[in-house]
Length: 394
Image 1 (cartoon, rainbow, N blue to C red):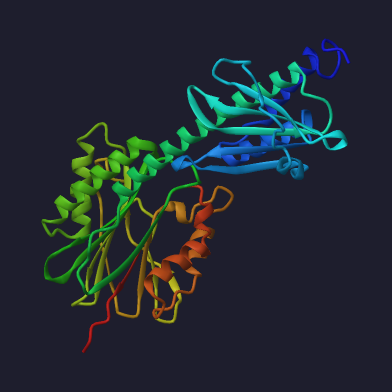
Image 2 (image 1 turned 135 degrees about the vertical axis):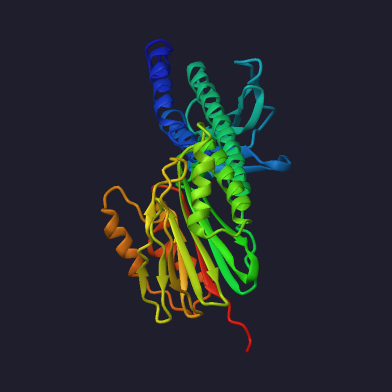
């Protein structure tokens, strides 16, 4: 068969390289990339293929196989492999195994890019030796895969850093007074979200009262996260003056409006006074809180809504409502309920229709809310803060 015009010639090699570019690295998942590589090698070069990756501690893990895997088990070389240096930094080995009709031909090449060794490819077939153009295709596929693996690992490292930063910024809310129980949840949007502007907080006040807060800075990314942290810091400072929630919002709005770089944000504050069995609400452009009674039925509270923080417009009002030991209060950001394909009133009605009994442990309440609103597949970041008066021994 001619090296120039046959299946192993330069035209076939070019077609194979084009196929490799299209078929390998279609996702940022490294295991998927390795499966795509093994499948490509099976279709174009071999009867069986395996991809091994180097893991921490220098251990090797076989992450993908394709084809007649029994050939891989019997591919140990009869003699020393022939090393072919198609590339100075990527030596390729070929060898034969078995005899007669059981003879197989194997080739292996490292997965290496930019000086980083990620693993190795093993391919085996039961027909003729691999030709030069086939080995060149194998070498190209290995380098292409290694580049994708490098990108995937750098992306994963960036995401870990971003999520660590998000956790550090959002963190757990502060400790309320012992007479108030809270549970919270933060869910970044999607598997590859960067830091964002959703947050919650609890602040101890005098006389056993606790201020609850949930907010959402407009936009996404690091800038929104920085502004979110700034709002939280200013809130703690202003709240320490023991102003009513609507006056706290007024101060926050005024201070934020004086900073031209600060993004607007929505915010909902609730000051809970267990001794009096009262809660005082104030909203800056935020969605209404949900209150669930002892039998589990819920309602959305009609809190007067002022403009978002940072506009300088002011105009915040307070709503006082009883808050008793058999009730559960839920604060949240819009990612929990908003869906592009659905009217917001429909989404809010779904939240209010949940049944959250007062005897359900508060962490399980948060779980039920996130499951009932399918928060794992939300289109925006989700922050949820639930609160309930703690039963005190008589």
